[in-house]
Length: 145
Image (cartoon, rainbow, N blue to C red; front, side):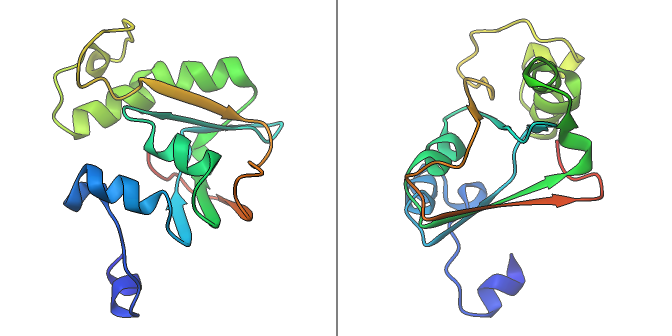
Protein backbone atom coordinates (compact mmCIF):
# COMPACT_ATOMS: atom_id res chain seq x y z
CA UNK A 1 0.00 0.00 0.00
CA UNK A 2 2.87 2.33 0.79
CA UNK A 3 4.33 1.73 -2.65
CA UNK A 4 1.01 2.50 -4.36
CA UNK A 5 0.75 5.79 -2.47
CA UNK A 6 4.41 6.62 -3.19
CA UNK A 7 3.61 6.31 -6.89
CA UNK A 8 0.87 8.95 -6.64
CA UNK A 9 -2.19 6.74 -6.20
CA UNK A 10 -5.00 7.72 -3.85
CA UNK A 11 -5.95 4.88 -1.52
CA UNK A 12 -9.17 4.54 0.42
CA UNK A 13 -8.70 2.17 3.33
CA UNK A 14 -11.38 1.64 5.93
CA UNK A 15 -8.72 0.54 8.44
CA UNK A 16 -7.49 4.14 8.55
CA UNK A 17 -10.45 6.20 7.36
CA UNK A 18 -13.57 4.29 8.46
CA UNK A 19 -16.91 4.05 6.67
CA UNK A 20 -16.35 7.04 4.38
CA UNK A 21 -13.40 5.21 2.82
CA UNK A 22 -15.64 2.22 2.08
CA UNK A 23 -18.00 4.46 0.10
CA UNK A 24 -15.18 6.13 -1.82
CA UNK A 25 -13.47 2.82 -2.56
CA UNK A 26 -16.68 1.38 -3.98
CA UNK A 27 -16.60 3.87 -6.87
CA UNK A 28 -12.85 4.07 -7.39
CA UNK A 29 -11.24 3.27 -10.74
CA UNK A 30 -9.68 0.16 -9.19
CA UNK A 31 -10.91 -1.86 -6.24
CA UNK A 32 -8.50 -4.36 -4.70
CA UNK A 33 -9.69 -6.98 -2.24
CA UNK A 34 -9.65 -10.65 -1.45
CA UNK A 35 -12.37 -13.27 -1.21
CA UNK A 36 -13.08 -15.51 1.75
CA UNK A 37 -13.25 -18.55 -0.52
CA UNK A 38 -13.21 -19.61 -4.15
CA UNK A 39 -14.80 -22.86 -5.23
CA UNK A 40 -13.17 -25.31 -7.60
CA UNK A 41 -15.90 -24.28 -10.09
CA UNK A 42 -14.63 -20.69 -9.90
CA UNK A 43 -17.30 -19.07 -7.71
CA UNK A 44 -16.05 -16.28 -5.46
CA UNK A 45 -17.50 -16.15 -1.96
CA UNK A 46 -17.27 -12.99 0.14
CA UNK A 47 -18.57 -12.31 3.62
CA UNK A 48 -18.52 -8.91 5.30
CA UNK A 49 -19.95 -7.22 8.34
CA UNK A 50 -21.12 -4.22 6.32
CA UNK A 51 -21.16 -5.62 2.78
CA UNK A 52 -18.56 -3.20 1.45
CA UNK A 53 -16.68 -5.76 -0.67
CA UNK A 54 -19.91 -7.42 -1.76
CA UNK A 55 -21.36 -4.13 -2.98
CA UNK A 56 -18.14 -3.06 -4.68
CA UNK A 57 -17.85 -6.32 -6.61
CA UNK A 58 -21.52 -6.10 -7.58
CA UNK A 59 -21.56 -2.56 -8.97
CA UNK A 60 -19.32 0.46 -8.61
CA UNK A 61 -15.65 0.52 -9.52
CA UNK A 62 -14.53 0.23 -13.12
CA UNK A 63 -12.06 -2.53 -12.31
CA UNK A 64 -11.88 -5.07 -9.51
CA UNK A 65 -8.80 -7.06 -8.62
CA UNK A 66 -9.45 -10.00 -6.30
CA UNK A 67 -6.34 -11.63 -4.84
CA UNK A 68 -6.91 -15.11 -3.41
CA UNK A 69 -4.40 -17.37 -1.66
CA UNK A 70 -4.39 -21.12 -2.24
CA UNK A 71 -5.64 -21.65 1.32
CA UNK A 72 -9.03 -20.28 0.27
CA UNK A 73 -9.72 -22.78 -2.52
CA UNK A 74 -12.56 -25.13 -1.55
CA UNK A 75 -14.49 -27.86 -3.39
CA UNK A 76 -17.97 -26.26 -3.41
CA UNK A 77 -20.43 -23.75 -1.89
CA UNK A 78 -21.02 -25.85 1.21
CA UNK A 79 -17.28 -26.00 1.90
CA UNK A 80 -17.03 -22.24 1.30
CA UNK A 81 -19.74 -21.56 3.88
CA UNK A 82 -18.09 -23.98 6.29
CA UNK A 83 -14.74 -22.24 5.84
CA UNK A 84 -16.27 -18.81 6.43
CA UNK A 85 -18.15 -19.83 9.57
CA UNK A 86 -15.16 -21.67 11.04
CA UNK A 87 -12.41 -20.46 13.29
CA UNK A 88 -10.17 -20.44 10.20
CA UNK A 89 -11.93 -17.44 8.66
CA UNK A 90 -14.47 -15.37 10.61
CA UNK A 91 -13.26 -16.56 14.00
CA UNK A 92 -9.61 -15.84 13.23
CA UNK A 93 -10.45 -12.43 11.81
CA UNK A 94 -12.63 -11.55 14.82
CA UNK A 95 -9.79 -12.59 17.11
CA UNK A 96 -7.31 -10.48 15.10
CA UNK A 97 -9.61 -7.46 15.45
CA UNK A 98 -10.02 -8.02 19.19
CA UNK A 99 -13.77 -8.54 18.89
CA UNK A 100 -15.70 -10.42 21.54
CA UNK A 101 -17.64 -12.82 19.32
CA UNK A 102 -18.54 -16.47 19.86
CA UNK A 103 -16.73 -17.49 16.65
CA UNK A 104 -13.36 -16.65 18.21
CA UNK A 105 -13.64 -20.06 19.88
CA UNK A 106 -13.76 -21.65 16.42
CA UNK A 107 -17.48 -22.39 16.49
CA UNK A 108 -20.12 -20.24 14.74
CA UNK A 109 -23.29 -19.74 16.75
CA UNK A 110 -25.04 -17.57 14.13
CA UNK A 111 -24.87 -14.74 16.68
CA UNK A 112 -26.79 -11.48 16.68
CA UNK A 113 -23.87 -9.35 17.77
CA UNK A 114 -23.88 -5.73 16.52
CA UNK A 115 -20.19 -6.20 15.62
CA UNK A 116 -20.77 -9.44 13.73
CA UNK A 117 -18.27 -9.63 10.87
CA UNK A 118 -20.20 -12.13 8.75
CA UNK A 119 -23.55 -10.41 8.25
CA UNK A 120 -23.50 -10.23 4.43
CA UNK A 121 -22.47 -13.13 2.21
CA UNK A 122 -22.48 -13.27 -1.59
CA UNK A 123 -21.67 -15.98 -4.09
CA UNK A 124 -20.37 -14.60 -7.38
CA UNK A 125 -20.94 -17.21 -10.07
CA UNK A 126 -19.65 -14.90 -12.80
CA UNK A 127 -18.20 -11.38 -12.82
CA UNK A 128 -20.85 -8.71 -12.40
CA UNK A 129 -21.88 -6.83 -15.53
CA UNK A 130 -21.85 -3.73 -13.30
CA UNK A 131 -18.04 -3.58 -13.59
CA UNK A 132 -15.94 -3.16 -16.71
CA UNK A 133 -13.28 -5.69 -15.67
CA UNK A 134 -12.85 -8.21 -12.89
CA UNK A 135 -9.49 -9.89 -12.42
CA UNK A 136 -9.01 -12.83 -10.07
CA UNK A 137 -5.43 -13.61 -9.15
CA UNK A 138 -4.85 -17.00 -7.56
CA UNK A 139 -1.63 -16.98 -5.56
CA UNK A 140 0.20 -20.18 -4.69
CA UNK A 141 0.66 -19.29 -1.03
CA UNK A 142 -1.35 -18.88 2.14
CA UNK A 143 -2.85 -15.38 2.21
CA UNK A 144 -5.22 -13.99 4.82
CA UNK A 145 -8.29 -15.55 6.38
